[in-house]
Length: 447
Ligand SMILES: Nc1ncnc2c1ncn2[C@@H]1O[C@H](COP(=O)(O)OP(=O)(O)OP(=O)(O)O)[C@@H](O)[C@H]1O
Ligand SMILES: [Mg+2]
View 1 (cartoon, helix red, strand yellow):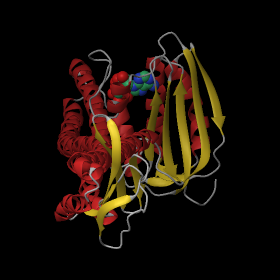
View 2 (tube, protein in one colour):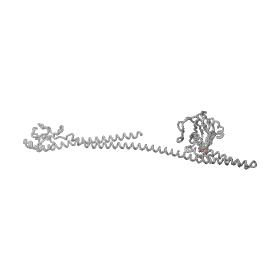
View 3 (cartoon, protein in one colour):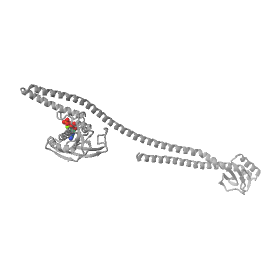
View 4 (cartoon, helix red, strand yellow):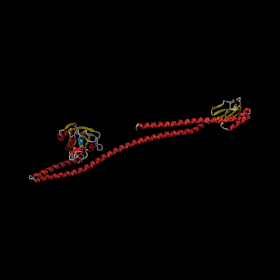
């Protein structure tokens, strides 16, 4: 997978953690604020009680009535939070008071205000009459035990933590979803590629089945047709003999019919070659020697405007039908000539090669790795667009005008080469010329 989703992953984790952290900080701040609010409220409550007591005991202080002062003080004992209460006279001496739970009242009045101790708070207020201070009242109250306070904040912190967790989990699952979507999309792409691959293979298979069927059909017809031609030819020969020397004129007709029959026989031969049903007589052939021997015939066929270059480097020999191989080379040379109407260069090249992988366009056919002899015929002609290149060996496929080409040259070449366990490849592009290579298994006996 690319670096992008990983970066996105990091980003959203950071955002989730930051959100969770902020939520926690807000929770802590709320707890602190709540704590402060609680303390202030408690001090206010106790101060109010102290002020009520101060107002109540003012007369008792003024008259030094200890009993009355004691009664006021003890009335406060009903409040369980109060641990001690003291009333001091104008000279700061303790006049009345109570204490419990181990608390001790100071002997002299403490200064006015609030003083916090461990687990308690002392609130001291003045008792005054007509604006003049006459004494002091002090109340000691327990503050809330730490555990209880924690229990109180526990709920809040729990809520905040859960909120943070929910954010984090949501972010993680969103990330997981994004990764899953990424995986799905790459699986989808792969699937599409495989489907495309499959479509191509099926197309190639369909094409080869079609060729097979056309081959069988046309091969069968050509075979019977050839026999019929032979019968007609034989009968023509008999007829000519029967007519004798007096039938000069009839002889001319018979000769031209015979010629047409030869052309028809040639055509059926090509169809048989394409359908791989021709009788072959394999023999050891050295392609370099064969090509060399054909040079004159090639020159004659392609005309003067085409320069012929020979690069005959193959030494190995192959097993094939000599006549058919000659036909193949001539066919390729004639195709090259037709591709160079204004002349050009024709290269006939042979070389020994060792193939470990199938040559281009050969996949799907059975390939045998090993030593081969390659024969290439290259031209500097018009070349072929890809769709023509792919269909060039199809029987009856031709781009030449009606009557010029049968579209059987390359298909018979291909049929013959395959029948001889070889391969044929075509390299071509418009304006770039064409190289057609046949690869024949080496005979192994040397040249
Ligand atoms: N050397 C080449 N350069 C460009 N196109 C070629 C070449 N060889 C073959 N082709 C193309 O492939 C087609 C089929 O060739 P093929 O030899 O089978 O038939 P043809 O030459 O048209 O007819 P035929 O060989 O029966 O006279 C040609 O019509 C042409 O379009
Ligand atoms: Mg041809």
